Image (cartoon, rainbow, N blue to C red):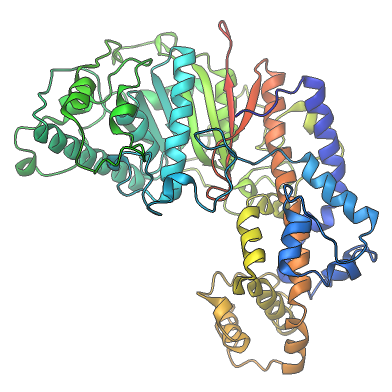
Length: 568
């Protein structure tokens, strides 16, 4: 399940190879496919590559370039050694993305096995945790929640802090499903309100289960999930972070069904009952998970399991009167697709804060990471109030690089476009290629339109058109009318039909060029994640990378996992 544990020297050597390789092909990682014609990108490729690539079919592009596991490679022509070496090196340097299913087999289906019977409902996740949750998120919270529980067991922690918690789907599974004490932090107040509302709805669903199965409630004292509305300041100290967590130690009762519907139901007592099993007890997961072989309906929660959940009470209670940071209880930190610099911030808190015993970090939105070259990338979250500088932090500490080693390597720079490309879904694009999907024409449409926009208004370089609904099904002229209007140009702008036809005939070249750049996306992601692993190693903490989610379903599927040794 875990990637091989590399020594310090092995990780450093891999980082050197990554930076050397990526700097050599930065023309690919830094290019914008919409400029295919305006920048004549095809002719930036080595001249020996062009004739063998331009005649590839779409399935051949998937098999011969992008798929690292494809064994039956049949080349339609003799490829130059430089192209073969490029492809082999890209695959060899990237961390493996193959995910193993719950039986230990490598997944190969479009959707995980848990969705084969019902494409929108996981057969392995209880129905109360599926409400309001899309299939992709169901898959993620089940697998990550189980991993977090394992870390809690190993560290003897019952508290979890879920940062960037959104609507609280992972929080609810950790708390009500796995019996952990959870504090959730989310910057968006609207999402926090929704999370609290959904907590109440889940509690009401639990009450209906208990009434149906004649379960009695016990007087308990542990609070249910604590939701904190707050922005985690990347420049703040770990002490300030702990103070944010304290704000959640006195949570309000979650909103939910009306008092008339609840009758005598006590929200607080019910929530305690479903949270307080000891950390080594899997009662909650057993009670609310659905195994596909059991054929259970949504209302078939046994009275025995319900009673076990209520009676599994842990005496560990958060003390609201704690007055010193030393007395704050230890916890495991988690962030499911924490955006941009947030993942880096959590890793720094993990290293510096003595109360954080373990971490699971799933990153995303690499283009929003701050770098020395680009400290304010597009999409960077603006803090709700001016930042208070932390004198202990160096002003040069950005989201990338985090480690001193990578920071000192020549060629370690990653442009905004390179990091944006690392967020693309390679597996999804391979499916399009093999299906010869009409979606493949979209890049060529946009690149063709860019030529006419730039000729008319040169200052409108890479103007944001945004997504045109079902663009691949539209004739180009209709697509152009919609796109021109979005950049402030007349929809009736004359377009030379012969030039349009000539550019559209080059769609296969556009697709192949994009595939070459996409081949480097996992390599860029590997460098970002490896830098974080080296950062942890430099601070005395070993870590491993787990390809936890099915990449066909969840493209950002790698989880960085680390535990502190006793005494750290």
